Length: 144
Image (cartoon, rainbow, N blue to C red; front, side):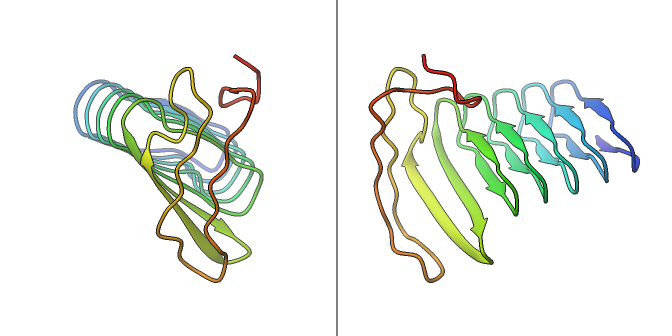
């Protein structure tokens, strides 16, 4: 199923299955059920929440929150202050920073009970780094 939002602030939800959801302009709330889904916020400050499955989440421009469920997911932020939560599984993150993509892959970059991120195979002009946080935080920055 394909769902397209309008230019305003939309709430878009899909059920189980392989769905494609596009928010359009505005600050959208997009969520999907189980299945390999594609969620695209496009312009605006969007919240994307995917259920279990190998999902693709793309926030577009704006300050976005991307939360993936269980599965091997791909999350992509763009310009803005994005918060990315991959959930369980082996996830990949493409974050555009000043026009350069930084690729993070490996074990889930937010493993439950752990705050260690694995970073490998950088693209663009930025060097690769691995960061360990002393206080695990959820996707909203709250300590767990």
